[in-house]
Length: 78
Image (cartoon, rainbow, N blue to C red; front, side):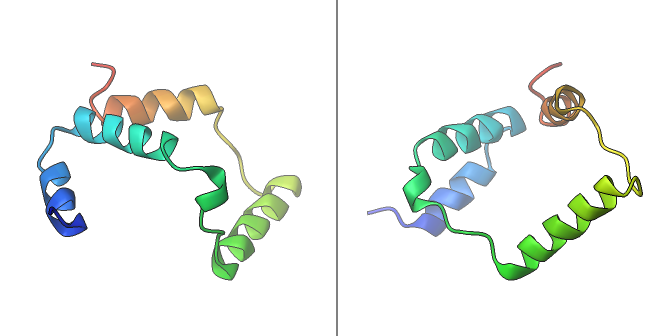
């Protein structure tokens, strides 16, 4: 039987576009009921960023731009 470390090693040897597709496929295969809740540090940071955004202390980037940049970096869009 293959263990998770062997699978991880094999997955890390894939091209970036295949790794990105694997991530998406794995994510889609996990039920929201099985998601691990974020820890308190993550929640604190999310709240801090939300407050800073609400106060006009930081800017945001539209999702379409973030997604395009991530896809390009992963080699999915040329």
